[in-house]
Amino acid sequence: MSKQTKAKLLLTSILGLPILGIVAAYLSYNTGIFKNIGRTNNGELILPPVDLQVLKLESLSSNDRPTTFDDQTWKLIVLANDGCDKQCQQQLYLTRQVHIALGKEADRLERIFISLNNTPLTHNKQQSEFNKVVNVIMKLHPKINIASTDKENIEQQLKNKVPELKNKILLADPLGNIMMYYTQQHSGKEILTDIKHLLKVSRVG
Image (cartoon, rainbow, N blue to C red; front, side, top):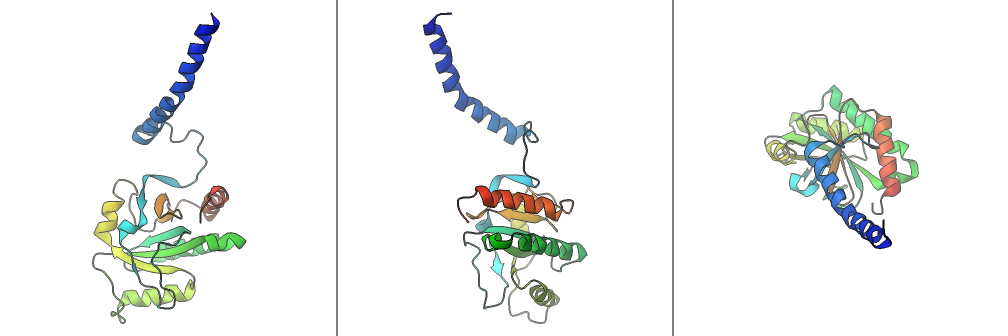
């Protein structure tokens, strides 16, 4: 083989690498064929990610802790229906332990509890059963932010990406991209491992 032929083959190989990358990404997203090859995350990836802002969250936290949910921190989000059953309470406890275990990096993570409601909640419903639940959560988890959102809207936004939203834990990056979720089968250790890795490689948040 001549030097000229070798040079052409080398050039073809170099130019072909980006194309192969695009093809591999396409196959991975559309067929899942590469889903478990070289996988390092424990959570389930959400592809493409969902913008946190489209969930239209309404803050239910106390007035001394207002939030717009757009600050550049990583966000660990617990989803539940109007109340917070035993499984929901376990998820809240799990995320609190993960948060504590981050130590000096804890300020880079924010915890959010989201109530899935068919009708928006307001601060005027002070006597409602759900507000009683909110008050209990805030006492047990003073550093958590609480929000509500329309159930139909969040189901539409996460349709075909997160099965059965109740008692799921979502992870959003500092830019507001919901990019991973965890089920009740995931342990706190698995969630902590993912977050520590993401904090290590992240240039923001």
